[in-house]
Image (tube, rainbow, N blue to C red; front, side, top):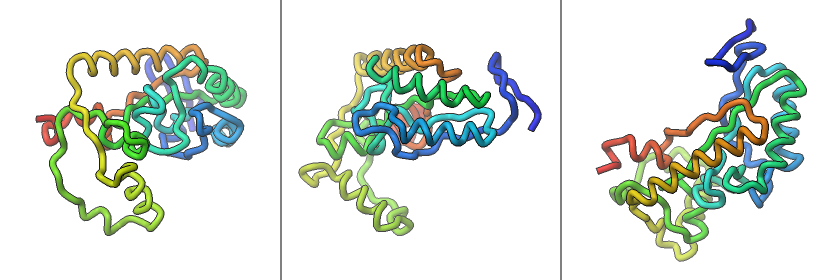
Length: 203
């Protein structure tokens, strides 16, 4: 419960809310009352640092789930600012988890948009499907895309990479403009950055 510090970010305690999906953003990617109240309640409860759920740097592209927070346009800043201010009222700090889903961008697949990859993934099914609930399985059916053929892959070239880097940078600037205290770059879970980092999928 003692205060903590991450670089220059001073925290009232060492309790951290890890990033996890709530799917509480509005359908247009903005932060409305539901998601603002969700995070404010956790700040009110005494959390020192809240890390938002995955937020799309190229919304709606790269979104890993419905109702994803967007950071790709200035129109998102007002709602994000309100969110940060409501968290700050309770002495907590807030960080934005910035992400692009790459091959895991379920919303791209469902909309028929190409998904970004470093190389075309190997074909094959995982035994993880045995562990999924009916609702989770339904999401995978949705992820088969509008024609039922599954994802359309786009292998990124240097121009694509440069554009994605710029999108992450622009999203970080918007986070600062919206009074967020920090950003976290999501580089795990098979999303686009982790795909580049893994020799198993970046060949």
